[in-house]
Length: 258
Image: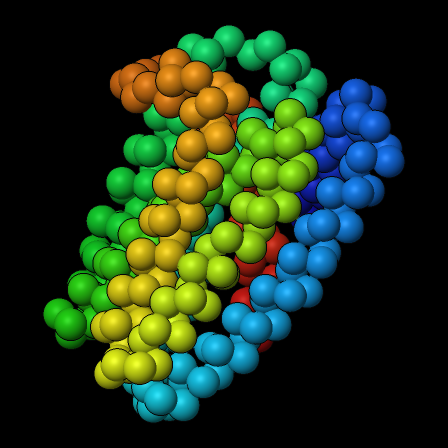
């Protein structure tokens, strides 16, 4: 209990330091403007997404959608393996020092790519351990790939937030939902199945990643997005990010304990 308290305290202090580092260099009026834009976009897009999802559920059938929901929940339960606190740590570091070397940013990127590759394989193994049928394991695999793409978009958003690119972050917060709504509407004119629904979710997250990669490439150039195998550096990085990862795990346990 004492360990959890200390880790939580460290997490809160890191978060406060990160926010202070961002706000210190930010025009407050500009910040609230982009917060307003983000709120408006989310009010428009996300309720529409919930409505479309309910319509998809009715067309798919409650049994099939229940299978998807169960596989999706299982993937979400272990999603911390996709990040291990890297995104929050990156935001704190980059907000405090906008001149971080490209080599260090490449270290974060390489670690995220590695985690994104390991996670779907881990979920396949978990599916076999739980005794899932092969068709369910395939669905679990593609759902996991979708979350790998999603976590990479969160990595790009962490960079935008640290550099106060709130206009980009506001748009990024709803881009995946926009694509999902668009493809869901198209899907309603065809045969709605669990396979097709998982497919459009995967395509939506992949397209979101591509859309966000364009401004990220322009802002940071190509050097921070080069993959480099640096096992010793990754170990040192994870030693610094583990409090963020542990807090995420504790929050997940608290949220799923019922």
